[in-house]
Image 1: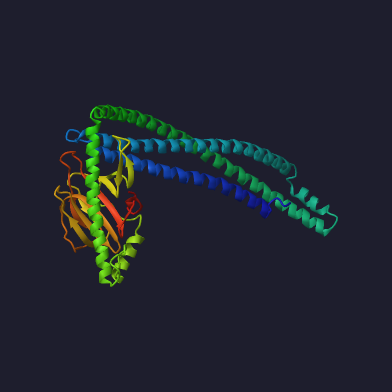
Image 2: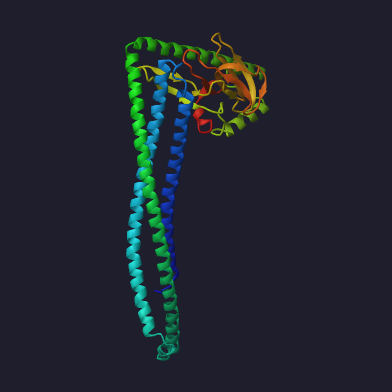
Length: 409
């Protein structure tokens, strides 16, 4: 086989590429975990700012327990992600240590091979030796092959020298990377120790509050059930308004009023298509906030036998926070119940976004709104001291999970 054959060069390239790609894949995973860790860290900071700082005095025990339960869940996620990062770093460190060991062996062999070639070259260094080697050929073909061999041998010497340089540089880079990885791992371990310590304190605080609540569990359970009934009542009214709008759209189009989906005009179809194309990219309905309650069925932190059903999400935010339309559309309806928790519904073709728990609203039924237009203000509950926006999305009369529609909700 030729010393500088394309096959030899290709093998070297593939080995280098595979090692690089493996490192790239791990690095990408590490970047994803780091980004998620930073998101959770920011979320915990927001939870502290929005739910705890300077608000403990006015908050009900029930609300504080719910807030602590929420904060504990987020902190557990943070600890889990940090553990994943540390474990991945451990694998990367082990992989790099293995690579360095293999490189040392390879370099040793390359240097030994190169030293032998230098000795041979020194012994046959004169031009006369090379000339005699060629002239001693029995025929022209053999002379030509010997000439090719001399050239290939010189090229191979250069290749060996370049390989030694490349592998030495690679090993130096790996050593530097290894030191950095070990420092990063130690930092993550220290951060996790602190996070676990804070988590233990929060759990202790929550347990103390829950033990107090247990003495009056029936009272607090009754409060939770009342809140759920109120929420269900508002959701029922929202569904009635949507169903009435569906019936009206079908009647106007000359279709059956019993249809459960909107009959859309060409303009409304375009609006609905635009809304759908922005799935996962819609802006938050408030500039600052954290999702305190997710869509679907959620176990109560007070009474685990109770389930809190949510047709949307509940976002804790600042007192007096402005509410924004998440997409352009038309105000379908406004509800103003006796408790003052106003609700605005904005229609986007056959989609409707719902904004509940407003102290003020700045639009009227039939108004056209644009994306991020301020349409109202979130109410602060006097009893609990909470400022919570309830936000939901409907497709026709069916609820949707807002987390699938709003960007990083």
